[in-house]
Amino acid sequence: MIVAVNPYVVTNGNGKEAVQFYVDVFNAELISLQTFGEMPEDPNHPLPSEAQDRVLNAQFKVGNTTMMLSDNFPGAPYTIGNQVTIAIQIDSVDSSKQIFEKLSKEGKVTMPLQETFWSPSYGQVTDKYGVEWQVSALPQDE
Image (cartoon, rainbow, N blue to C red; front, top):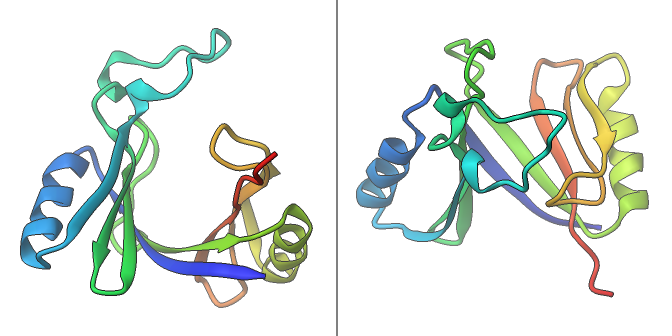
């Protein structure tokens, strides 16, 4: 079952500034802000110094909507017009697989579904209409 659908803004290295801007503009409540430097370390993929302070994920409440924001990774392509995606949060891995598969038909998978440190099943896909989706199963309490 789908738990939430959220607008997701991607910025080009100025994420902290953008979060403060949107929090101020919308009189929003900042829920969380995590930088790439706060991620668990991976010795196979060391984090470049220019990524340390970039926003990995921020969430802020605007009315009844939770907006999300992150910076792109240094060196990753950044195209104006593609900076807003839709993040969909799902209550189970099985449902995330079903929805991801349906969105992928005639679309393009950017990141296959995989386990991450924040989700047991996360992936990115552009559907056949050009809409970019981030599909994420919520962690289950053990």
